Picture (cartoon, rainbow, N blue to C red):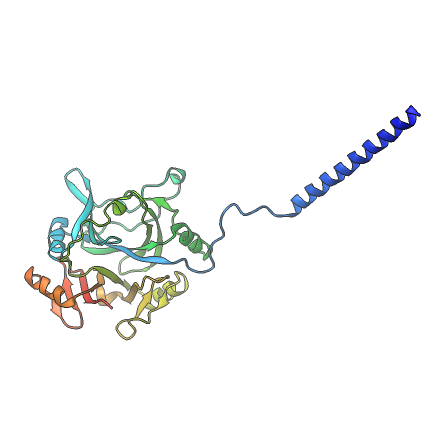
Length: 319
């Protein structure tokens, strides 16, 4: 009788072990049949929005003279980079998120490659054009709402942006080669303002009430092949034909709802200087400020001002 009980118990234990083994094999098979979750977020299917134009950069014969001129327009230097006693880059503030960056002409200008994150220190630096010896438009920078998403979208589109790095001022930044400008391929910059950066720490500062205009809404881009450049911005970068200022200019709207734009024109019509369009909440006051400061301007459909290096600023009423 005792022998039968032992046999019965052994049979039950064997069956339990078999069922447990089978269950384990089933779980393993199911786990192997389900693909692992992607380690990185998939690129978005449409162009991520941009917050607007962050800055333009120009090379000038004298940063001091240019600062004196922009001061007359009510714009102040927020901060600057120096090398010894020489200013190598000046950040002139239009508003909390928009700047005009001034660089000196000649070989004293700093490199355009941002300081890399430690994890990306070995990433190849993007090629950049040689430093010109004359005044010129250098580059345009857009502010992205989510720079990593924007970067990944461009990669998915077959473009080759540089890695996202942290620039010297403390903001995220990447660059990308664009269409051919008058003397070299366009260098397009993208940034995202970060907490604790030089720009963010200056919010609410260096903004005079007597600025002749308080928002940059468009940058004109002189291109060797305007049609090809326009197609690139529409099909690769996700810009859209503008409707707000339809009939005024042939603008292209940035992705998103910033209402800011670029204008693409033949290289011969503008050359190597910059041209920006700004808005003023009180265009009459803008004209009075220019007169009071002794700044020459033309008064037509726009108030047009030219800086000491030939860079053009057009001011229109805010809409």
